[in-house]
Amino acid sequence: MKDNILIYPVIVTECNDEAGHYYGVTSPNIQGMVTDGKTLTEAIEHAEDAIATMISDTEYPAVQDPRSWELEENDSIMWVTVNMRRWLNDYGKTGRRNVTIPESLNEWAKLNNVNVSKVTTEALKELANI
Image 1: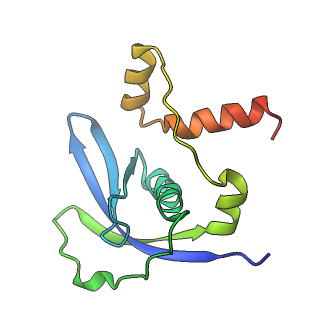
Image 2: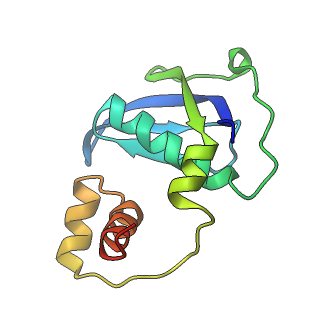
């Protein structure tokens, strides 16, 4: 099967607030997509996963021309490459499941920008020997 490579523009915002220094990522191209990362690399990796998750069960949106997007002072446009074949092989169709974790771990995960869904998926794959 041939790789299905998609490339979407995103808006990366460098943030310094009560949560510390991090990079937020959104895209007018993928409505509702919001993610972040402590580093630029981490933010773009999270954006790849977020885009794939949001479009996996839909017709892939056409790529918008980001030159018409209005940017704020700390914004920049970057391009995210998503290999949908690889992503679907790794994650397939996703299901929503609520999990309960100790409040202290929940706070730690928030402070450290840990993607709890990703960690849970990786742990379950390890247990299942996948």
